[in-house]
Length: 117
Length: 104
Length: 412
Image 1 (cartoon, chains in turn brown, cyan, red):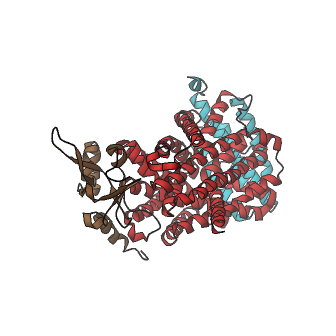
Image 2 (cartoon, chains in turn purple, brown, red):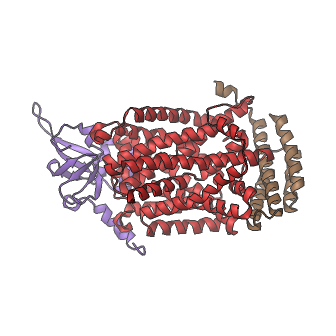
Image 3 (tube, chains in turn green, brown, blue):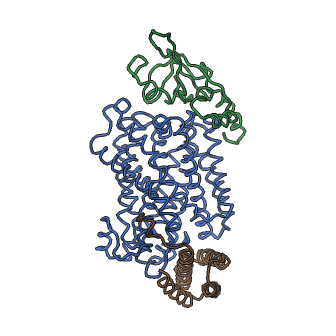
């Protein structure tokens, strides 16, 4: 599948694993952003990744727990940065270029304190 | 409805459960002692199992769910375990097995 | 040649890793209480785990999607989250039961006090997962779990009534069972299905396929490993049942202590047999402890798209690393509260069957989706078996809780 082929956006793209050009897991496609005006063609503009992206998909009280644990930030990945879509979404560049993987870096500092990490 | 109609009443069922558990633990202890005496299992294994059995029987006597005669049987079993008396344990097992049949 | 070696090792690993605390406990009790009447349930459970195991390996190889990501995609975020939490709790309880089992085996085999044994085991398991790569972990515990073959040898040595064993392969209900015992029999049917089809086995197998970068060329390995490996593994479970029927039932033993199962091998073969049985139990249960712990970590990582796996250094998958370490520690803390590992096994088995339908449904849906699976989509046989197996686990899930409460966990 490529970004221009026929897709069910909610069933087949949202909630797919995202991997970057290096094959690193970079999160999930938590939500999709569209652009368009009344009477005009609706197009996918971007993929949104992060707790801030799925906050409206969860009941408020559940999201408040998530917000305490993970914050409410989100990252926007332009749709044209998608290389191809199979069972996962592959991006054209490394995850860091989009602002992804920041949380992994923070937790990595904790793990590196453990011997032989 | 079929499942519920097959369900036993509570207090009697609870006592029967305890009798069955205790019967098995005592039988397991008897087998352990028998195998120990035949040198088919090492003493470290036997001691571990018998200690666990003794503790479980002790908890059952303190549980408050058993009739006094049952508690007496379990205490006899604990003594027989301590004395490594497999024959007495097997006799207690037979008596408890008869008691189960009466409850069922 | 190397493909043949890979297939052989895969089969042996699947066989050695088949039995865990739940099979040890439930198959021994099943044999002691109902003789050979429940062998067919082990066979049925094995067919189900083969069907879904093969499917999960195939989906992982072709679409590269692990089970928890499938769950999120097919069940949606909200419902998927509920299943994730439930599955994580089940995996944690199961891990605690396995650690308790290791503690018991160490106490009985070496005389180490139980609580100290569980702490030592937890530390050793953490070190094992920390230092060893995925494949090594899988192979070592799977292959050393083959000491459990001692139970099969014991079953042959005690000369069971083979005509009754064969009769037990077909679905049957023993005659003249009272109402209570009929309910208990039904409970054991559900419990054994759950024990054999534990969801963590599929989660772990699927994750392993992705960690080892399986692709189309590995589909034959996948098929042979699941079919042959699980069939051979089920022989271990069946032999535990047969031994209990011959050796325990006449003695009015309905195993209430984990160590009693090891005596199935001690009776015919003495101390040497017992040694093999305890070694087999130690490695099989330890393997299960590692699998369930890693599954607790796989869940959130696959669900939220975080980096996961033992194919990278711990610091390269930091959230996954912290999660599995925390899981081991938490599981050990549960054991240290003094709860009986047999109770943990009971709760794990009953709660697992409730989660199994929601774990398998996404798998079935994706395995039928040509957009993801291409030419490797489910054929008619796979679908017939898949849908049939799914229907069985749904029925078992519906019956589980009522039967658990009505029979007091099979104690009636």
